[in-house]
Image (cartoon, rainbow, N blue to C red):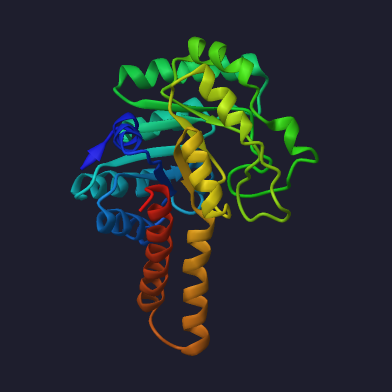
Length: 280
């Protein structure tokens, strides 16, 4: 059943859990994530990141995401991840997405506030929840070079009350040392930032760059107040590795066999991940 961002987070918070948000740029990813969530009977978020437009255009994958969410036996939020501009957010809303993230986190603070508030006003008028980011991750969505000093990108807790009051967002992504993509070095995490932000607000808090973090850290950040965790890279790599192994074992065959093998591997990865997020 399709649900809002606030609804799936509320279900998870009530049970002391975090809801998993998975990028699903193709059908195999979608079926893998929804299959895992239905097996565990937990709510989930399926997301399309704007950087995946070249992989699967939102106008094509978006309607599929919305339809599969409606058919699911668990609450499913259909989310735009890292929307880079107002127009792209409008596209997602028009397609039936129940949540959008506008990411102006790399802009100067005042520009982030102004641009985010504009998206919030439009989205709320259409019954859609909004996530924004304060602080920034060392690597942008889709990978890239790490910042020379990741700590310079950490969220400043003292800015949170002003940002929330002036934007009206429904969820806030905070930066405390995680990064998108594969970690080339051990991340320098400052989990105290979660505590400091949580002291200032009860708004749902989001952790980006969730792949590659230990199960112990996952449990710790949830205990400290993280309510939504974004995850994709390691699930996708699991699918790639399974498909690669199949082609090495059997050099000739059908593409649908390779796609199904990847889907099953991604579902197992998502299942393990959701168990951790859900304290199962």
